[in-house]
Amino acid sequence: MSRHVVCSADELPPGSRKVVVVDGREIGVFNVEGRLHALLNRCPHGGAAICSGVVTGLSQSSGPGDYRLERRGEFLRCPWHGWEFDMATGQSWCDPRRTKVRSFEVKLEAGSELVMGPYVAERYPVTVEGAYIVVDL
Amino acid sequence: MNAPFMEQKARQTLAVVDCDIHPAHRTPGELLPYLEPRWREHYQTYGVHVRQALPSALMYPRMMAGGMRADSLPQGGGPAGSDLDLLRKQHLDPVNVEFGLLMALSKGGMEERNPGLAAALSRATNEWQIDRWVREEPRLRAGIVVPQEFPEAAVAEIERCAGDRRYVQIMLSSRPSDPLGHRRYWPIYEAAERAGLPIGLHPVGYNGGHPSTGSGWPTFYLQEHYVFVACMEALAASLIVEGVFERFPKLKVVLVEGGFGWAPALAWRMDRHFEKFRKEVPHLKRRPSEYLREHVWWTTQPIEEPAQSRHIVEIIDWIGWDRLLYSSDYPHWDYDNPSFAFKFPMTEQQRRKIFRDNAMALYRLA
Image 1 (cartoon, one colour):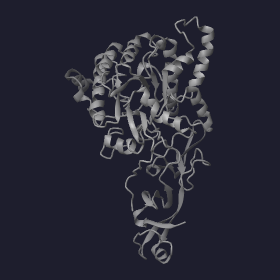
Image 2: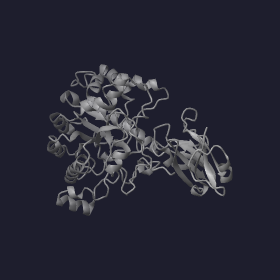
Image 3: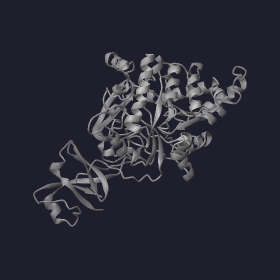
Image 4: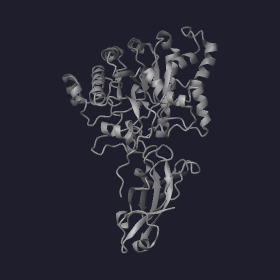
């Protein structure tokens, strides 16, 4: 496991996303209302660059005539076939056991922590005063 | 640190022939230069009859991007499928497309009800395909759009294009006014056979004045998407039972985007009834399944995805591995990438047939 500083916290405000390359892999980093997610930019179903998809919720129903929108902002919808993935776990809603988008741990870290640690793998300029988005691969 | 917009590397090593690519107009007036002055004036004064065909407003709204891959909108503006460079970058190059067959759906003459305008739009669409796409990109091939409800004019358009090898098939809508086995369409098949060109049946818009199912319009897009299958099934049966393949023994028909999982069931049922009712259709000399297997080809997209992949292999074993043709449907939302969409085991030879060799032979591509 290696930890990578991918950007400063300022570059990823709530409601934004970024596609970054870490160790040759494209990873989408999302800030949804302060919750951070990092997902491999490859849909396990059809191969799309999934991280350009819409962040959405589930439309649920207990039977015909009843519709509810739930868990808003927790799912990423693939731009091709529309498969929906739980951004926290990477699991697809249709086939959660077998079809998952690879997800990574992602955290907000203070620069003062990062400059001391032995694990800063990316040559991203880090200052003690700043805050950074760090992805674990 | 921010990566450039996803650029796939060309990791698909096997060259493929894609039998379903949809080119779109950049602007609503794109066909005007290809129309004679009389029809240009008509077009500008009255417009065309059909307003539903992609990429305009859709009768059944899709869940995203107007029915397109959400990542296929050109950054410089214009609808999905209207930018040749993006088609190259997003599909032809990374997927290693050796030949791509155009299926021009928008404002062709297939659905137009004004006979003169239908003929003019068909001709304009065919010239536009060559001028804007095939001449610019030698991997692409055109399909002859015809005013299919006016067979005499359709034959004239086929004959006008037929000597030009940049046209590799004749396109018909799988939502015609009458079942396509009807004799009034036979001049089209006669011309196709004479020209040595396959007929490609593709769902287009909402023509014919008929609901898309035999029992009325569906409620949801999920149903509307599925009924492509019902249209194809009805047309395959019509062509067979009316005797089209008996009368035109060299005719080849490609069912595009209509699935293929239903083929064995249709054939079993028709064969069974043929044993009992053959006196009703004495013009048929063979069992219906024999015509189906000899005259019909099938494109793959949207590929059937059964939970147990061996089920699909059994169906292809029945249809024949030499009858399936890879298609992507770029830039539509249900696009199939050849590296990901085929989730069932294939031998190297079977893979080569479906992805390339069957189409090379059928369309005589070179």
